[in-house]
Image 1 (cartoon, rainbow, N blue to C red):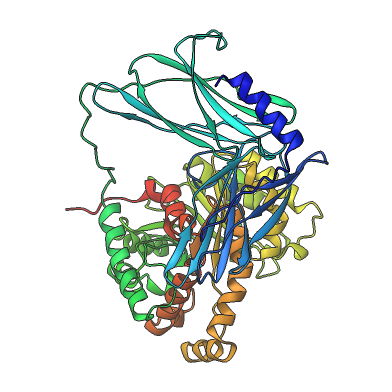
Image 2: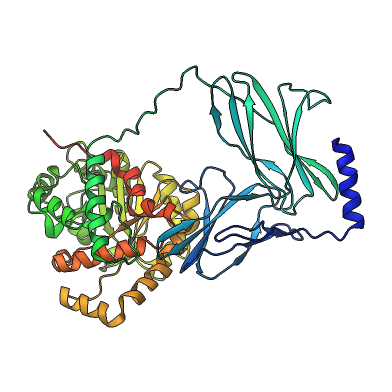
Length: 551
């Protein structure tokens, strides 16, 4: 039967028969085809699905990039209840292909659905899939996003001629279900350019995608797969952190628990600065692979030398920052007549003169001097500039947004990010400050943040008693509500940390509880985001500063 005849029959059937378009019975965890409201300038899309059995929490991921939901390329909606079966998302871009998936936390762990695709108020639109090479031929896995208002039928056309699919010069496969978005075409000739498109029959007639093209570049003999190379000492440290993390989760007796590696992005080293062995032993005890560590020794040369010696032996696992003198700015500034001199003096304390990769923690909240500093104060600009000169980092703990006297605090931070683009700014602290500057994450690649669980109390026994009184689950629920939605909006810019700074914070009982709670919190993230928060974001940013141990 020719396609024009099929078109006529389909249209007649639609006009004269009682048609009902249904997505069919949904399997467990299956996605239904989204329904779209196209009345406004943007689209409102209703997603629906069948939850996985036993789900306790769910997240919906949405992206305009078909790349397997790589970190930083998608947004998430959640947490949703484990019984939720639909979610309406407003403000969706019209005419742009989207992909989506659902993640559900079940008693057996995280379950991820298949990936769905659609084009709100338009379409269809081509995505793309891999080429598989065989003996003398190849197969192409075509993928596309169907129109959000399902068509009546779809066809895919393939040609080796770039002539606009002139009659008689292409092959067609179909009819294809109106909600399908994938088709595997076998027998593709290697080394020949092919052109393809998808056609959909809608109530307004035929709609076609743009034309795509590809060449099946198949080698005469498939090359042996090469393992991913991870420079030492990263691989060994990661394996050890994973192994000890698995032991921590095993002790939790089946509770949801992240068992992967950890990178502590906010470690006060002061209580541990006796020797490098103390630093490494504490990290290993707590199933932590690496840390961004800093001290508050100040500029005294003897103190600098002691800190430098202590962390030098731990350079394979510690990225050290030098603690700047923000707590004692006036007395320190007496040795420097101006901001440039201060900048030069601070620069001498950083790589390659010492092991320090940057400056931190810069505190802007805890005394009458620093409370008046702004991100444009000469003292802070000297710090930021020194870090830029060393190609390094600054760690800043801002005060609450309500305490900043400048009503344009977000603009103040933005000015610093613009003025010092070679300085990596890692912030942590009040969530109202995070919310104030959150729009800057999408505009400035040199802005990062770390999240840490609170440590209430004044001793190990007091801390454990407070946790027991409030309830661990309630504590984790509060932390999840504070951190996880914010992380899901910026999954490549936020890192996990501990913020341990009191000596009792490093007691085995306290540290053990912090790590267990952190692993339970991380497990509440969708599977594809857990490692990014736990260690990968930090390792991508800071791994270049790690140094292989001396043999």
